[in-house]
Image (tube, rainbow, N blue to C red; front, side, top):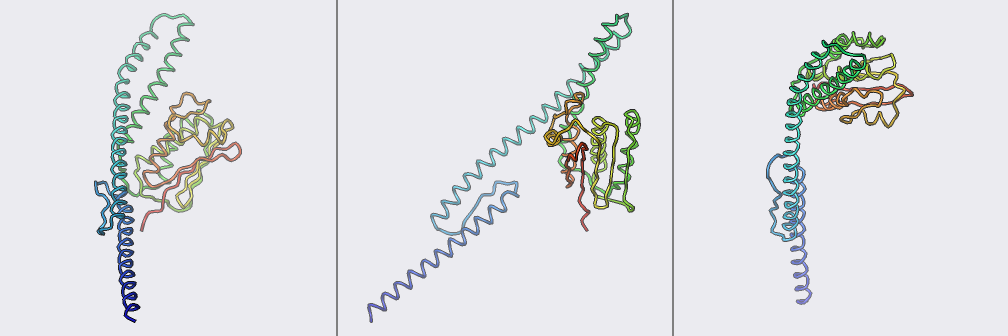
Amino acid sequence: MLVVSLLLTVVGLIAAVLALRLCSLRRSMKEILRGMREIPDADSNILLTVSTGDRTARALAAQLNTQLRALRDERRRVQCGDAELRNAVTNISHDLRTPLTAICGYLDLLATEEQSETVRTYLDRIRERIEALRTLTEELFRYSVLLSVQQERLKPVSLVRALEESMSARYGELVERGITPVVTFPSGEVTRLLDPVALGRILDNIIGNAIKYSTGDLAVRLEEDGALAFSNRAPALTHVTVGKLFDRFFTVESGRSGTGLGLSIAKLLTERMGGSIRADLAGDRLIITVTFPTPKE
């Protein structure tokens, strides 16, 4: 009986020790899990800590901390490189303005001189290329500025009024292309918390894209849920090209004068304000849909 009692006592002690170690490991795993959830949202050098003395748990935390340090170092290098790239683009775009302006001035002077028909043709081609380069330079400059601004100034904005203003601003170009837009508004007002300047840029870029690539029509429909759809015939597009429309510097072959930044800027601004934007091809019709979230109560 004494031997059995001792065995039961030993087994009980072993079970108690194992239970304590199990509880300690569970607590350590919970601490590590909680730390992994909190660290990605914290812009600091906080690392994982465990309160247990278990060597395996501490070794796991140490290994994870090594990986976290490496990831943070890589993130800093990427952020520094991104900032340097934006500054370089901004500076290059700014520096190109002066020689481009000078070239345009000399072209204007040449236009006053006596020229043959061949020379006039060449000068016209040069001016077209210079204007395309100047447009690209301006878009690059604006794009780099947009990337450097991390927060928009949000306030209640009427989508109906913003759309009316954008359509009115482009009315002359629409008439030139023989486009009579069909615009459909909901019966009630549609208001969202947005940056009015950013919203105007989004609408202007999308409408400009429609003017550039439409074969002569444009339909715009605003829904009560904040979905804004722009539709036009674009037979030259395919599902592959539509999938690339929001890529930076991508242009459709028929629109070589474009910079390929208009829709990428629209996407950037839309997503910054919590909205979404997509492009679909239904038959030969391109449909670009911008949706903004419902204001929080």
